[in-house]
Amino acid sequence: MPDRHKILVVDDSIAIVNSLQAILGVSGYQVETAYNGSDALRKIHQNNYDLVICDIEMPGLSGLEFLGRVREDFDNSLDVILMTGYLEHDYFIEAIRLGASDFIRKPIDTKQLINSIRELLFRKRGHNDVSDFYCHLDKAKFSFDISAGHFSKFTISKIFSSYLRQYFKIDPMVLNELLICLDEMVYNAYIHGTLELTVPERALMQDELHQVIDARLKDPRIAKRKMHLAFEIDNEQQMIEIIVSDDGDGFDFSSWIKTVETEQILDIKEHGRGIAMLYHLSDELRFENEGKSVRIRKSLQIPVANEHR
Figure 1 (tube, rainbow, N blue to C red):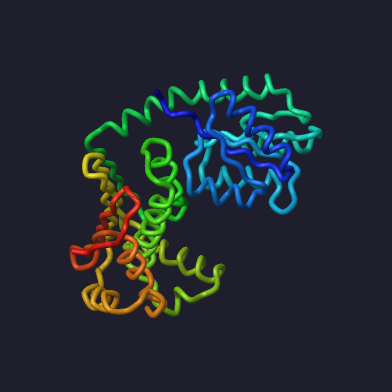
Figure 2 (cartoon, rainbow, N blue to C red):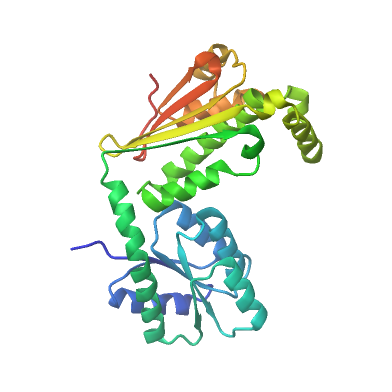
């Protein structure tokens, strides 16, 4: 028997939540609930849902704000149906722009809601076929090179997150740790290795820092430098390997590794926290090519304890 589709219902009304939970449960769906937007955001980062049904008018984080956060973190990979007692023009336009999958008026027409859910899940089926293909590969590899000038235009971890969420079944908590590692790896390769920013420069306010970066990128020697990112997912071993390399001069990584092996993460100096994060969140950390390349390996399963080799 195939797994039941998992739906999250979000509304500050306990009566509505209980009613929808009963209706959807009878219709064959697995239902979880949240009574505010903040709790719902926490749950979608910790669990994999096929669809979310959310009220627009809620205290605290509104349904529209919740939808905006979902689109920031998950792009369009998670469908969100909005519920509302009235559908004013401004709400409708903003919700469309934020990427609402559908609207359901209150009081809720059960037949309309079930039809909407079925249609959205049917549209998603082709995408799931692609996901199943990737998940059944023994191994999958992906790599790219990007110049320093173009790199600053993109948020690599967001692109990486979207790709993994769409095509691979990775526990959300593990994925969050992977994204933290990736952010640290890419940031260090760009700021330290590629741009060669000094410690005082890295401490500048945001506007001043951007000015320094823009000035660096006008230097042809730096602008032509490239960053390399690659990852390999091994579905048989349930492992992922990420490699980030730069064209900089490298650094003395061995002394930092010795430090993080003996000190707690909160005791590491500010400019050593990146390496500490990689060490504690990965299962294996290696620097190569005089520190110009960093490689991590991490289990795709929730780890009981990290073991470094």
